[in-house]
Image 1: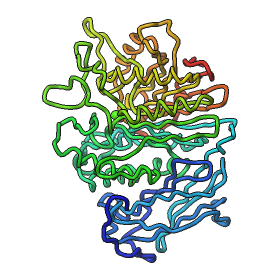
Image 2: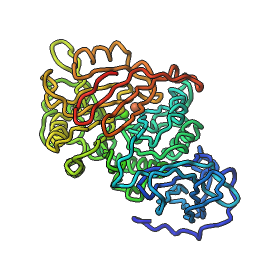
Image 3: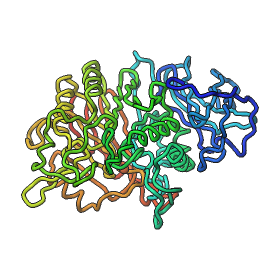
Image 4: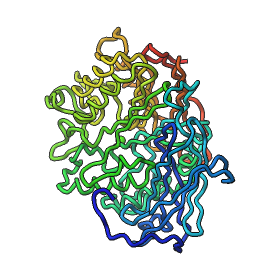
Length: 498
Ligand code: FE
Ligand code: CA
């Protein structure tokens, strides 16, 4: 307990549960060459606050070479406490690099499902290949996680999730599935919402198959919030945000460095895959300036054009000053290999002319032009030839060349953006996406009609992205196809369609 000390009763080693406690499955994340985070949460009544009462429970964890757990290589015990929703985060150390392991948890007489995870390669090694998936936007009501079922079969080293893990909204009728309860506002609400999402067997399986790197977007808290400002300008929003952040931490395989205080949560992180690739995971919500020119009397995003003077105010930030500097320093320190920037919203300009003016969303990087200029300067000044930005939020697959001046068609790209389509959340009509692609020549591809994910194969020479699309999010057994394949050559920013 870093920031407060509840009166914890001694952990019970032989507890009795009102039901099976591992209803939310298991997960792993944040892999290092010799360690990984293991996660679970005890929740015999997952949709009703967890059902664990006030006491602490001792949970045993085991990491093994084999699924039969005949060769256990690391094990230990940790207390699951009520103050953290009886969640369990174990930072395992002393593992071997570039190896697969099995893991499980034991509480009382109950044993969790078995998870599999993988450590990162040794820092000095250059692995032949890194294969990872990118997913975002898994609105529970809009469909089943058929995309995740296919992702679990893609032979991945790693999963990267770039936001909208839950949606906070109230239950609505007429969709494929239904949220439980009203709009999430309290810690209990957010716990129940995360738990409802986590009860999905395909999401559980994907967590149990590979380690994840995670960042959030807006819906983990509230639609289009920015920093401490909510869409409805709710004066008590900081308290709501703290509850949402705590529930997020409780349900994700994150290190203790991400454990929130009531004031903040440090989600930004760097993860190396040997010398082949470095992930810079960004938080573009917690510290951002409010969106410029919001609808009258409200906060949140809007469609704006260049009549919005506030847009170009130089002090406006997407990442916050500290994180901007952290990113710039990190990019400068990684001259070789691939720099993979995992973040939430679309970076490329995606403006469409209405009347005689270019209009765009104020919630994505288009709404933070000065901050985007600084991001591009940081990439360009660090001399990186192999930089790929990963994004979500758009509910649309986009492939874009990132340029310091989007109006200069002959300008050389400085990086490539790969934005994955949503897992389930519905997108805009394809006709509107076609208009965006037509008017923004740096956007090479746009498809919003289908749901799916990205699979990236990274080698020293090339980064290849397959844009995978499922046929129907309303069908649990839906098929998957490759909608398009793009490649970026090392040292040569810009995507080519294969
Ligand atoms: Fe979304
Ligand atoms: Ca979003």
